[in-house]
Image 1 (cartoon, helix red, strand yellow):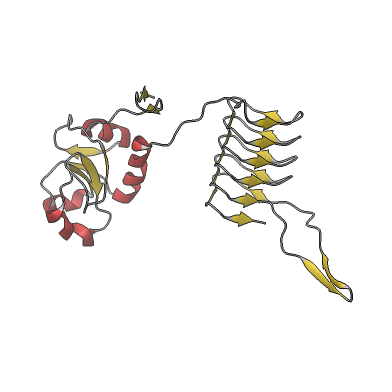
Image 2 (cartoon, helix red, strand yellow; image 1 turned 30 degrees about the vertical axis):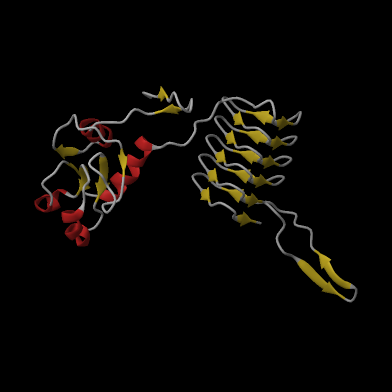
Length: 229
């Protein structure tokens, strides 16, 4: 909502909010000029007057004397330690987490299948699925609504990916893997590779075929270069 196009990059971006708009979005009381423009988030030690920063624990209040932050996310009980603009939150760190969403600069999904992607006949795509260049979706894979398959991702035969899940560039989703809704699989992770199973015999090691699969439930994030076998 409220996106504009950045002329230099062509990406859709959010306009910089004011202190009052931040307070409304975060449902918080505040102190200061509601029209104060906030251009970004920064840690106390490097924040400038255009930045919003935060104090997560009372033991860090002594650092306020050295910050140049234009506004802080602050527990209401600590107001005596700060005379400047503030968003008043009983849980400053959680509020900071929500505030990051307003300044998110990640590219946005196109809702399109790139001409340089490969989608096998028999794969099922939900509504507004994005499949970026170089991705390969095999037969009988099922992608839910608003799934985003990044550049160079491999989605194996019969894999299932739930609504609103994002698979970042270079990840590999092996055959028959099941991934839930609203998950994020970061770049170059591999989900569903063989586990390391061998049986010793008189003739040497005998590979045990991995006959099960991997199931990832809803709201899971898996980090870059991870493997779940």
